[in-house]
Image (cartoon, rainbow, N blue to C red; front, side, top):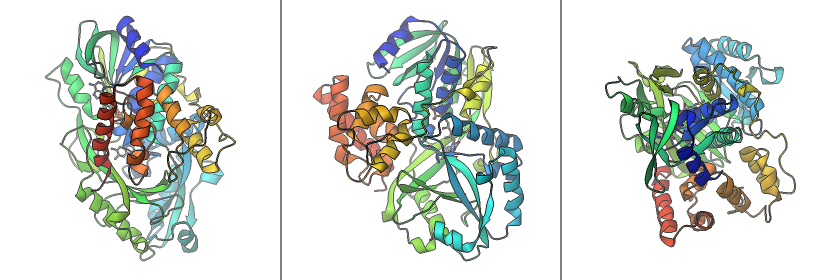
Length: 503
Ligand SMILES: Cc1cc2nc3c(=O)[nH]c(=O)nc-3n(C[C@H](O)[C@H](O)[C@H](O)COP(=O)(O)OP(=O)(O)OC[C@H]3O[C@@H](n4cnc5c(N)ncnc54)[C@H](O)[C@@H]3O)c2cc1C
C-alpha cells in the first residue's frame, strides 16, 4: 500500500464515507463500506492498531462471563462472530482449549451447555469435564487444593494487530483508501480537515458522512462537532503481563472467573510465551500509551501465585507488560459490570461507533454501514488472506509463524531470497518478513514494525533492542530517511519500549 498515493487520493477525490480511526472498529467499517461499493477512506492519527486494538487479551470469544450477566444477546452475537472469523481467517483465528477449574461443577455446567447450544459447537469443540490427572498433564502448575475438577471448552485466539492489518488489506483490495499518521483535526462545511503528522501538513478531505471509530477518543471527535455533546464514554484500564513459558507452561488457556483479589484471571500461550490478564479499573489518565503500573503487575502476579503456586513465578520472569483502555458506555457502577455492547450515535453527518469487542467488529461494522446504504452486507462471505497450509521449505517453527501472521501472503515471503534468515535465534521472525512489512504494510516508524506488525516488543526479552538498528536501516532505505530521521525513529522506539518493560 503506497501512502503517498493514498494521500493524493484523499486530497483529490470526494468520499461517501470517511472513517476516523484505524483500530479494529474503523478497519471493519472501511471493509464493509468498500465491499458494498461505497467510496470510503480511513484516516488514523498515529499507527494502525496503536490504540486498544493492539492491547487486548487476544481472544475471539463468546464471552462466557456475559451469560452470568444474563446478556444472552451479546453471547449469541459473539459466538456467531467467532465462528464467522474462524472461517474468514483460519490461519489467524485459531481455536483454543480453555480450562475452567471448579470447586463444584453445577454452577458452570448449565452455562457451558447453553454456550455450546448457542454456538452450535461441533462435537469436537463441545465442553466436557476433565479429571484431575488430565488437568495435571495439561497445566502441571495449576493448584489442586480446593479444585474439584475442570471443564474444557473452546474459544479462539488471534493476534489483534495482525487482524487489523488483514482487515485493512482486504478493505484496500476492495477500493478503500487508508492512511496512517493522518489525524482528524476539525469539521469543515464539506468534510473534515486532516493533519498529516509525517509531512506536518494539513489538508481538507471532502466526505458526505464521517464515521467516528476512535474508541476511547470518541468524545473528543464528537465534541468538535458539538462542544456541548454529553460524554458517551467512560474508560477502564486492563493490564497484562507476558511470562517466560519455561516458567509457566500451559497447554491451552486457563480462565479463573474470580481470584481472591476479585479479578478475572486469564492465562494463555502466546507467541511462544504465556500471557496473563487482566485487571479492570476505572481510568482517567492520559489516553496515549496507558501504562501497566507496579500495582497492576503485582495484582496479576498474585493471581498467578494463587492459582499456579508450584510454578514459583517471580517478577524477574515477566518478559513484558502492556495495558489497554476499554471504551465503555457511560454508566454507574464497577467497570467490570459495564456493558461490552457497542453503541452507535448519529449527530448530523457524524456517526459514532464505540464499545463492543474485537470479536464483534464485523457485526458492529454491518450495523453502521446498514445506515449508509441499502446494499446488503456480504462481509461474512469474505476471506482474509485465508490459507490452510503453511509455506514449504522453511524451518517448521518459522513456516508456522509466517502462516499464522500472514496467511496466504506467507507463501510470497517464503519464496523471497534468503527467506529463512532469522532476526535472532530467540524468535521465528525473518528478515524476509520485515522486508515484506516494509514494502506492503505502511510502517512509518521502527515501532510500527517491532511493536505492531510484529510483536517483538512484547515477546523478545530485550524488546527488540538488538535488532532496532538493522530494522531502521531497512525502513530508512525504503522511506529515503536522512540519518537524523533514522536516528529519531530509533530514539522514539527505545523510549516507547520502556512502556513494555518492568524496570
Ligand atoms: C485489556 C483489554 C482486553 C481486551 N480483550 C479483548 C479480547 O480478548 N477479545 C475481544 O474481543 N475484545 C477485547 N477487548 C476489547 C477490544 O480490544 C476493543 O473493543 C477494540 O480493540 C476497540 O477497537 P477500536 O477500533 O474501537 O478502538 P482503538 O483500537 O483504540 O482504535 C481507535 C483508533 O482511533 C485513532 N484516533 C483517535 N483519535 C483520532 C483522530 N483524531 N484522528 C484519527 N484517528 C484517531 C486512535 O489512534 C486509535 O488507533 C479488550 C480490551 C481491553 C482494554
